[in-house]
Image 1 (cartoon, protein in one colour):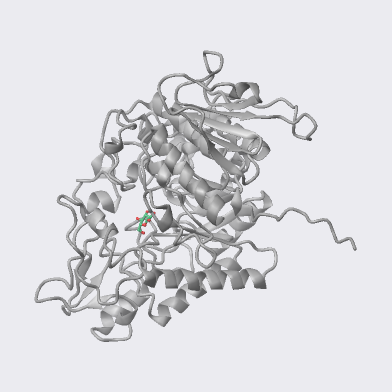
Image 2: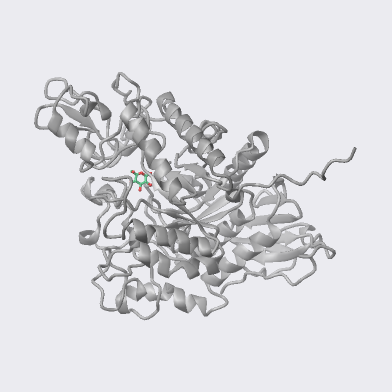
Length: 577
Ligand code: BGC
């Protein structure tokens, strides 16, 4: 008896997707109020389609007082009026779909805004009320808060209200924590997920996963190391992070998602956890698992010093999870919370492990060489684009934007800056509105020419990185990103990827017929006989000497099969200025 020929299993779209993060507020402003919006995103979809991304992830665009720029949600089932409305959102999803681009949203489960109607009701209802039971309201100890927990953005994690009780806000007083053990809260989030799935949202980046779920008795946390910051204490609190109570929430969300997908054939929804688990693949595995998240961001490359040993470990851990556990890596080098890659890798101390504090938000300052940062950032992205798994890009990285470190303090808006009285610079520098045009009018095309000043100012030389000038220049960073994404579709296929031992100073991965090699050193390095086994199909820098890879560069070498439809043709070598 002959059965149908077994075809290879079809992988869900997100396995190898390139996803582009849109920080809506800073992407494009359609109506001239100086604030990015959803029609602005619609107006620039061709830029994203031209780049070759499969999906966009929108940072929170729900109604919000914007104390933490959307991570303080006052209504989970609507759109921030400054960004548009539900009709605008539906149009965005449809226009994106017309270009083959899916839309992911950002859901914030740990906390809402102190303006959320349920929190307002809790304040009014008073101690012991059912309204308060949806949050963590407790009596203090005398005049002291209920325990010693600190807030991520500084200060105590507890805020006292007029009647003397205290409520918990792991990040800030205007972000009260939900108690997910309360059935109202659990039901509410299930409705929220379904609401957006019904509008065509193909998944969620789930914000601040580790603090969801608290030890029921809320005990004091043990003292931290001397000099630990509030943020470090908050994120290492064993009674408030990485809790089993949180896993119960994710299992519920996954059951709901799987049920939804079963009921809606053709849908392939993804839940991606934002959980910083530095060098703890075992901890990441607690989230990325068949009954919780489909994926969890692999932040270790982003947190690594620019050195082969640490980078190899960061990549190797993910490949190990893929092979042993089937966990699909979720690569990311940048986002709205961290220094932009060009700046981070251009710092004089970028190779020094001590320049990283282990937290994504803090860097030890050092002079920045932007040209060096540009080369390294391209090498880094070219390397991860060769790897199996999805790759998340942060808006503006395709333009090679740096952080604006000298953004004047008066313009800064990040609660990290405001709540530490400027002791920490915060994240505004990576959120500066994008330069679309070399022409400075309308904040370099961010707003209409008659528009108001942008919500964060741009530096004077912002036009240097303008998208329109780069689009016309085949050697620009933008052109190189396009070429890299195209090369990825053509050469970087298959799940079988392993680290290869080429040279102690290099990081090398073999993926099917492709070998990708990163040289994070300032010297050219010999790559043995690698170059004889295939063609160099990507090189972020040209090598001056035969048989070597240039300093701070990535190459891809592909054994080209002349008989395959893709083989034998000319390969595009990415070689920016
Ligand atoms: C988000 C931040 C936000 C914080 C609180 C993070 O993980 O990425 O931008 O400030 O959660 O919601």
